[in-house]
Amino acid sequence: MFKINKERLLAHLFALGKTGLDAEGQRTRACASDTEKEGRDLVSGWMREAGLKVVVDRIGNIHGIWETPENQGQKPLMLGSHIDTVINAGQYDGCYGVLAALEIIQSLREAGAATARPLVVTAWTNEEGIRYSPDMMGSLVYAGGMKCDDALATVGVDGTVLGEELRRIGYAGTVEPGFLKPYAFVELHIEQGPIMDAEGYAIGAVEDLQGISWQKITIEGVQNHAGTTPTSYRIDAGVAAAKVITYMRQRCLLPGSRTVCTTGCIAFEPNAINVIPSKAVFTVDVRNPNEEKLREEEKALADYLAELEKTDKVKITTERLSRFEPVLFDEGIVTLVEKYAKKRGLRCRRMTSGAGQDAQMLARICPTAMIFVPSVNGISHNPREFTKEEDLLAGAEVFLDVVVEMSEAK
Image (cartoon, rainbow, N blue to C red):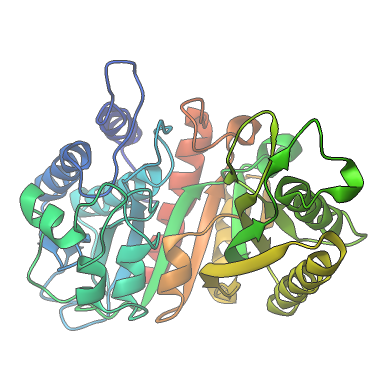
């Protein structure tokens, strides 16, 4: 049985985790920033040390390729995740999947293994989307869901242009995204939720991924004095916004509902303590793993907004920010994850990914699935994000087993 070098995997993970730290100890590696360049340099350097051919495509995805004369011409098994982060991030999200994939390939090479098809580890560009929109951009472009030139022309929240920034940091490749046609793609990731940790599971066999609907809602009322305007005379944009947020929460609490809904951004105008808001602008993030149910939630929200305009005498406009359909992952790969978790004596359950992932984009072009390991207390996108070493290693070992079978390594 093949083995990974556990010490090297953890050393790589903790070394990468040190990049992007500011004076206050906050970790941020926004796409194509100087701090992300540090991380890219480390990872691409480790790929070369492992004897891999490193290719950067035009959208900045980094591919470490292990191909031999015996398997040349075969479609590769692709592995990986991302190394960019949110603001003030933890050190596991995305990075674990990239470095575990790299470790598997390096360990197989060092063991003298022969694979029937090439293996590729990829660090995808701009998964988090905190600087450039949309998120999961590198994998989206790779899968043909967005034109590369359009992505490169994207203007960030800081006014920079993605293509120019990739050139500046030295990661504007010349190869077209999609140059490798994958046989399959597998992504190892921390759960980023509380289920596995709370219920005592070591491995998650991820069978599907929630659909995501993002909208920006603008409600216009009438600005007026907070003390002299009786309640019955008010046209209060703030109250109307609160009603929408509460309504969607109640939808989530209906019996049997798998919907989750979040308002993460909200702003009032004029935003003064003693003034009735004339405008409320807020976001609504709705998710459900079933496309029909997700459409039902979108319709319910639209119907409620139309009714609210009448009852509260406000004007409401909406803007679609993003929309991804639910993804059903490959049953064969999911079954393999369960098989090898059982062989290693690890408790395993089927999972839905509540977060968007690069794997959902690759699922457009090849069989795809994910493996989860627990996140302590379900914390992620937070410096307190943590996964125990034994869980990191267990996940990497199951990942190795799956890769060995799928690549027919001997």
